[in-house]
Length: 617
Image (cartoon, rainbow, N blue to C red; front, top):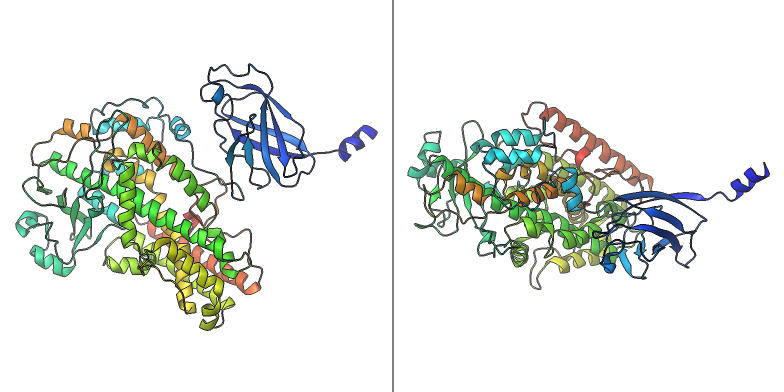
């Protein structure tokens, strides 16, 4: 009994550390792990004899308060069976969670390997190699040859069950004009299409060219006036330097234009494609009645350009990076007790951390996107600089963005329909909160923190003389709209353009990330072999699939729109506003589910129960 009492008195708190270790090729054994607090007080050493991929272990320690350091020490001089002493142990730590405290990890030489600067610890981007192995794609890595034919791409999915998923529908119908056009409305990049009221001079499509595609007996000019013609223009890629492979083999990049038509079935279908911004003999306009290979390859070029613009502009710049600007301004200018800080903090969660990882692992010189994209490193910077010139505050306001593209009445545009409902729900919630804490416009004008917050954002995105983003706010209505744009961008817009990537980019012929042959300059010159040699090779295909798979997984403890477990607000009126917001989101979710029951392909990316609060992946 005395021994038992003694054990109870000295009972330690058990903490589980989940650590993923990589040796750089060697085998590690016989090492110790120690916890240290800010005063260098430590736990007892935990001895580990060996590890394979992931270790989960408990350390009994007295209350050390905030754990700030994880110290790893090898116990024998011959623990590594590799000649490279520099890589003897801690190459990468995937995650370590200690009661939500951020950590610094230290190897035996005393060098800090990694500092995590958020709370709780961000989940991080999945390892490229880890995802490829999990999907059973490791057998393809390093194979630089082309696929034999379009059906050969199915081999990628031998270890993945795609039945009853959007990917299955896409694999069946990807080459139909209807499926091609549908993706401009409800695919991963639903912001490129816009109403065309007048054909640009650089795209000289004539009525005679498209007469066979027009179904109402109107001329092309009459169809334009009726509002039945749409256009997608990838001018932003004009002149952008293309990428190269490790073996210096060039990829190819172009800036196509695509004319689309609303047919009598209310389908949006392509009727003309020009692969450059410069019409002429070497830049023919491809049409649906051209031979099958010409038309299929022309559509592939459009979708390849769409992939690259999506990754760099629609996704990275206009959700990830702009949300980081909002987050940095919030941290710098708003006190934690400020109501707007409390409103925004759930929607900034992990964003700065995930962007830091993206800079390191996705868009760096050796990043994944640099390996699977036709755009070079210098080209990525150029594309985003061009996009910044046209990025405005109003373009982040969803109703304004839809109106600016003339897409108010486009049929079957579920991205617009669901987005408008989400915008309205967020705006009503934000307006309620603003009106709780500001009883007049004058209060907004005199709130120094709010004015500095808005000014800080403006400084982060505007050129010196630009007014693309406001430098101040003067009314409660303006403040409510501004904060709605911040929250919508970080939650709904990111969800719409991120979580469908595996569904729409997973079938490689549908959205090839790279093109290995130049675009055709004449009709009737390409065959299937040329097309297969143009599409991504086996190695690139596996890396692309692994990347989009990893980027579209929800986190284990994901917080979806309206979920605020930390309850930063303590005032009853604000709590009631949150409850009202949740009820409205539930109504939207149920409405979308009911609508989807009547669709062949569900559109779920803007269902509130599938929209994470913040940009966290």
